[in-house]
Amino acid sequence: MLMANWSSILLIVFGCVACIQLFYYGWFFSRVAFYRPSPRTRHFQHPVSVIICARDEDENLARNLPGVLVQHYPSTKEVIVVNDNSTDDSKYILQELKKTFKHLQVVELQQEAKLISGKKYPLSIGIREAKHEILLLTDSDCVPASEHWMQKMQDAYAEGTEIVLGYGAYHKTKGLLNKLIRFETFHTALQYLSYALAGIPYMGVGRNLSYRKDLFLRNKGFSSINHIPSGDDDLFINRVATRYNTAVMIDAEAITRSIPKTTWTGWLKQKSRHYTTAKYYKPLHTFLLGLYFISQFAFYPLLVAALLLCPWPYVVAIAGVKLLWQAIVLYKAMSKLDEKDLWPWFIVLDMWMFFYYLLFFPALWRRPAKSWN
Image 1 (tube, helix red, strand yellow):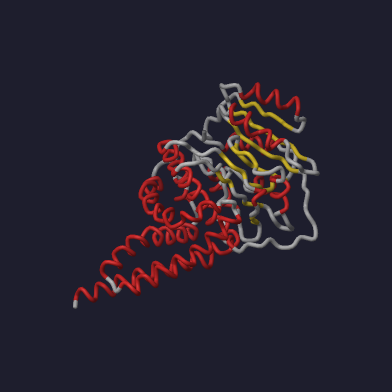
Image 2 (cartoon, rainbow, N blue to C red):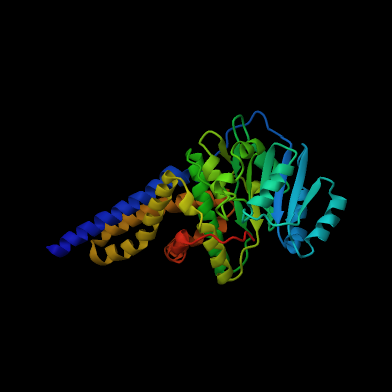
């Protein structure tokens, strides 16, 4: 009798966790999967300032910066590279590129900011030097997926738009680690893009992000988060984004791509640094992200337990509905974000997230590193 009661409770708990997952995939993530941009009768072509901060990135600048400089954009544009106290050959590479590309502007920083750690100071200098109202941010290790990246990101602007969130992906290479890195990156983008489409924007990524200079100045730049080493992208957007001023750009030609880490140690260090800012998010965002995390973390352990202790037809039915809807949404979303090759692996990758959370959960309480590079 006692065993039957525990079996019923376990089945109910498993069903509730599956329903929470179905809610997130139905209410939030389906917005990316079935996204269709509104028809445009007019395309905005604002003058735009691209800003890139770099420290000891000579190889990345030589490899990726030309992809930014050759963008097809009919309006006025400039590309500002803030060379932040580099000790390598970055200065000379930028000088050579400037001979060919007259719209390249270089800002040489030769002194560290005493009280502002991280990337915020060089980025603030780049924004201050920008001549145009529309800012487009990326990193030195990123390259646009097409020559229309700049145009596509500007197409998302409409009346009242102050922020445009893009997708910063990673290059596709062979190996398990590459799939895990790309799935985690896709999974993060699926969340912040879908939340923005639902009117609850909570973050963006500096690899592909655009906002107005006036928005930055009105909010006194990064002054409210200068004490936090990280957060120049996600925390700033968390502070200033609203349902009314934020748009997304979901288009394969509007993606930027970076070279992913090739070692587990390098990737673990990178991701641990990123997650140290999550505890500073607004309470609503923390609640929604936390509830999703708990449901995703608990689903597969509960599935195993329920298969062992509960009537298996009910367990299979609940899991089957959840996985079928998840498969549909992920297939459509991965197709939109040019990650469709990950779809055949989605169950394995989804199971991996259980171990992923175990690895990075402690980073939520860790003090952020002071170095941004």
